[in-house]
Length: 111
Length: 112
Image (cartoon, rainbow over the protein chains, first blue to last red):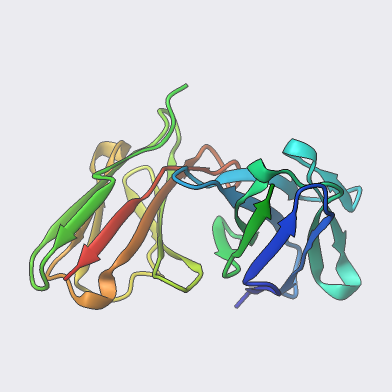
């Protein structure tokens, strides 16, 4: 069975700092990878996804992620965070319609 | 386009009572999913409907949970009788295919 590991439980940054959230997955076959975000009081929203092709994927709000197959990783990055990026971030892998999520990383950005 | 709607948004019930959660998917989405997040844990898959049929219910915790999808439209998830460990946030999602999930806002269930 597939699994997803997110390295950080809670990350605290100041505005304008760079962000990298780690995600590793375990699954032997072809995977589709996702990052979701949940802002306070809102529903889960898709930030970006990787299916195939260019391993560097760009998403909404300036986020990007890099798929490194040899490391089974799909890390999320943003060069300069804003206070409005405060949210919980989830990495997920989709196999046969089913999403398997990591435990989530809570990001707090201080103004 | 209307999103995925879940209600209630919050529910507080006593142990042993019954609770029914409802999910209205995006119109035309054949695939409907239920997920759950227990506090401090990851979001976990419960089950997947294709139209009115259960495609995969491997994540259902036990037989106190019953999910239905009437006529391939809205879905209900009933917990009977509720236990303390059932507390958490229940998410519904729908999709037109294997991908393209849209999630609802979730129902926060508290069993006391």
